[in-house]
Amino acid sequence: TLSLVWLRRDLRLHDNAALYHALKSGRPVLPVFIFDQLILEQLEDRCDRRVEFLVEEVSRLRSELSQLGSAIVVRYGKPIDVWQELIKEYAIGDVFTNHDYEVYAKDRDKAVAELLAERSIGFHTSKDQTIFERDEVLTKTGKSYTVFTPYSRTWHKKLTSFYVKAYPTERYFEHLWKADLLPMPSLEDMDFQAVGNPFPERKVSDKLLDNYKKTRDVPALKHSTSELSIHLRFGTISIRDLARQAQQSSDKTFLNELCWRDFYFQVLDHFPHVEKESFRRDYDRIEWRNNEQEFDKWCRGETGYPIVDAGMRQLNSIGWMHNRVRMITASFLCKHLLIDWRWGEAYFGKKLRDYDLSANNGGWQWAAGSGTDAAPYFRVFNPTLQAKKFDPKGEYIRKWVPEVDSKDYPHPIVEHTFARQRAIDAYRKALAKG
Ligand code: FAD
Image 1 (tube, helix red, strand yellow):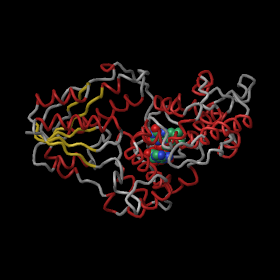
Image 2 (tube, rainbow, N blue to C red):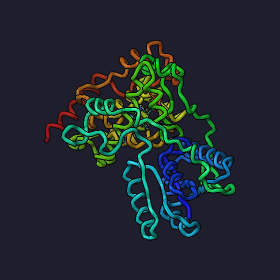
Image 3 (cartoon, helix red, strand yellow):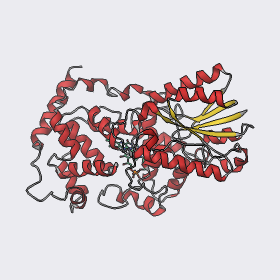
Image 4 (cartoon, rainbow, N blue to C red):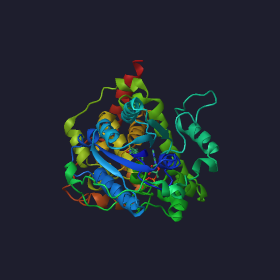
């Protein structure tokens, strides 16, 4: 009998908790990856960077395993159906996998665990994609944190070398099952096409981490931030390796970003209603304007506010947007246009190569003011001042909106002072009702 490791958001052989436990199970180990039909069928754009990335990275794993004399089972289908097939095809003793915190994923894993239990197959799960999860960081009275700053204090205090130690999988690679290369579906088999842009590097320099505090808010800079988000999203880099590197840096600002990442995972895990509703439920009383034409202009980057348009065009063009500009564009949609944050969240969800439900939802609810760390609703970003502060020479803007100084560039979609007051009035009205 075999131990199967089901890889999902942890596409690496190095420092992988589930793989480590499987390798130590005493049975030959065979990794599995499932292209989830339920997710892929919903993607509207058949040129999807995330699917392309997955195909590249699973192929890489497949060749790494082949060099080790082993293989990976790669299937396209509904996870539960694929597991039914695998049970028939292989003599499985145990299945190992890593935790996932999204509602869909938790339900999926529960269904698979039940199926396996019916056949007396063990289902073992581990923490892998976060430093701390579930109930590891709680308030003194054992409650979930709902504000970042106190959460981060406890998080940093708890962060000993124990939590960032790598799992030494390499030591046990001889326990991988000896097998020949197995087939794998191509992008085209799954009805997708390549976009073709290269993906960012899988590593970050110590120099960037040391200077991160100074560079992180300068979207015009080439390597202003690490651009590791897609690698963290799919686990092609180990969070523990990265946290260790960040700990050694002379500045701890970057480490704190990894703390934000954990924080939003735990918000989603502990407060699953955020996926559909506002974290602060009274914010769901806001009467959004939801003007579709204005939404389309925002999506296309044609609002007449250069920093907003630059951000949206960067997103549409490369599937990534600088964090500072994500904050500005999101705030503009919710406050200036009074469009429901869920519309913006869904649009980012379609376009971001690093799309992660927890961080995206957290970012959007922050911008709308409805989330955990809500800024007071009357604080409305002024996009013109934000641009002056963070792109003073207009370099970022001109890169993405080259016509900004010509007469072809549209007039502002709405006047700032008017929009600001309209937003404050709408928020005040909704929140007064309680
Ligand atoms: P760096 O600045 O180099 O940070 C390193 C890593 O820390 C990131 O890769 C990310 O994993 C983590 N991180 C940094 N900031 C945050 C944050 N605020 N919240 C959670 N994790 C963070 N991030 C996503 O990974 N996926 C998303 O779908 C996503 N959507 C967002 C939507 C909005 C409206 C906002 C305001 C932010 C969103 N973020 C999201 C957070 C942040 O913008 C990105 O993580 C960051 O821009 C990715 O670029 P980087 O890897 O260069 O980040």
